[in-house]
Structures are given as structure tokens and as C-alpha cells.
Amino acid sequence: MAEADIRAKRPLSPHLQIYKPIPTMVMSILHRVTGAAMYFGILLVAWWLVAAASGPAYYEFCHAILSSWPGMIVLFGFTWALMHHMLGGIRHLIWDTGHLFDKETSTKLAWATLIGSVGLTVLIWILAAAV
Amino acid sequence: MSMRTPLGKVLGLGSAREGTEHFWRQRVTAVANVPLTLFLVWLVVSLFGKSHQTILDTLSSPLIAIGLLLTMASMLYHMRLGMQTIIEDYIHAEGVKILLLMGNTFFTFAIGISAGFAILKLGFGG
Ligand code: HEM
Image (cartoon, rainbow over all chains, first blue to last red; front, side):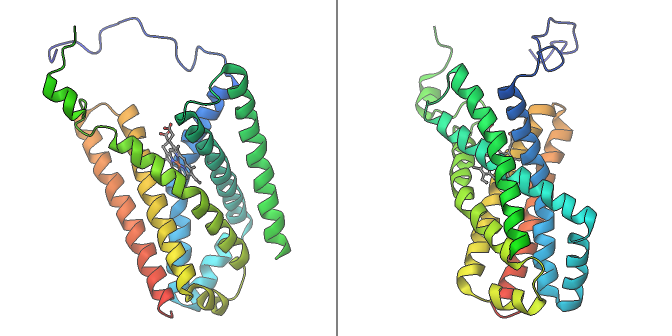
């Protein structure tokens, strides 16, 4: 097998560019994208903690960047990614038990994940603005 | 006819020699991440924009510091496993793959040690 030509023109199964996007597929992609984005986003959490441990001056600098407009947009995106990945993750955990797999239910779950994540994100920011 | 040896079947480790350990740890950390995420969001929402002194006072509480350590540990372990899957899915050149998998571990540890040190320093009183 080591000698096999892996670049040979073999028939491929249909893939992303060929299938029409459907809700469950989009949610699957978003689960990966949000996970990967937070992989780097968690740098901000670590930075914020290190800044707080470094003293008032550096903390103010860190906070000024995070609370600037670009900073807030990134944090808003982070909040949504976290909420979306959390709900999507819970969906995965339910599937792991063998439940809610059928086509209609999983499509409904996909929409629920999206609507739920947007709802929770807005709720969190309303709370943040209120305290 | 199965081509698997009786020993292979009993060990149940599969071709990656890891069995279901990766999958299982991804699930355990996923379950832990749910309450820890709610804790982190609550903490950040209540602290964002507060004075440095308030941050010091809050994070010097053992419960908060322990909660933050647990949150970082679980999230970092989980995201390292997740990124490993992503790398293994898309990167097929052996050398690059091994470098990226090492980088994944270095990145995770660098963040974990930095955040962990900061949390402990704040926890012990700034
Ligand atoms: C909030 C609670 C969370 C839950 C319930 C959760 C759940 C999950 C689950 C079940 C998977 C496996 C998906 C699969 O097998 O296809 C997964 C993958 C992943 N998670 Fe999480 N997760 C959470 C938080 C996080 C956080 C905070 C991060 C990053 C800092 C993260 C990063 C990842 C990554 C990178 C993957 C791999 C994605 C993939 O293979 O497509 N997760 N998560």
C-alpha cells in the first residue's frame, strides 16, 4: 500500500461545493468554526487575567483595548461563538445517547441552536449593559 | 471474515492505539464546560469595566480563583483535543502534521501556564 499513488484521479464522493447547504450541515460547520475561533479567542481571556495580575496601569491598557469598538465587536462575536458552540455541544451530547437523530427533529434542533445562541448572546449583553 | 487478531479485539485500541480515550475525554470536558462557561460568563459580565481594585478583591476569593482554574483547565484540555481532530482531518503530510500537533500542545500549555499563574497570583492577593 505504501507504493499506492495517492494523487491518482480516483472518483470522489460529493462534498461541500456540491451539496446544497441544509441547516444541520451549516450547524455542523459552525460548530467546528466556533470551536476553532475560541481556540484563539481564549488568548483574550488569558491576556485579561495576566493584565489584572500585572497591576492597575497595564490592566487599564488591556481594558481600554477590549472596550474599544473593535474590541467590543470581537467580544460580541466571542460571546455568540461560546453560546452557539455550547448549545451545539449539548446537541452532540444528546446525540451521543442515541436520541433526537431523525431528520425532522435534527433540523428543528439546528434552528433551535441558532435562535437560542443569538437569544442568549443578546441577553448576556443586555445584562452586561445593565450592571 | 475478520482480519483483526484476537488480541487486537480484546485490547480494543484500533489503528491509532488510543481506543476511545480521545472521544471520551472530549465528552467529559464538554459536559464540564457547560457549568464552567456559565460561571465564566457570569464573572466577566459582573467584572467588565470595574476598577482594578474590584477585580483584585473578587479574584482573591478562593472560590472564584478555584472556579477560574477549573474553567481554564477544562476548556484548554477540551480545545486541545478538538484542534487535534481538526488537524488530523485536514493535514495529511506526516511532517507538517506532527509539527502542528506539537504546536497545539505548546499553545495550550503556554496559555494554561500564563492564565494559571495570573489566577494564582490574584488568588493569593495580587
Ligand atoms: C461551552 C461548553 C462546550 C461544550 C458543551 C462543547 C462541546 C463540544 C463537543 C461535544 C465537541 C465534539 C464535536 C464532535 O465530535 O464533532 C466539541 C468540539 C470542539 N470544541 Fe467544544 N464545547 C464547549 C466549549 C468549548 C470551548 C470554550 C472551546 C474553545 C476554547 C471549544 C473548542 C472546541 C474545538 C476546537 C472542538 C473541535 C471541533 C471539531 O472537531 O469540529 N469548545 N465541543
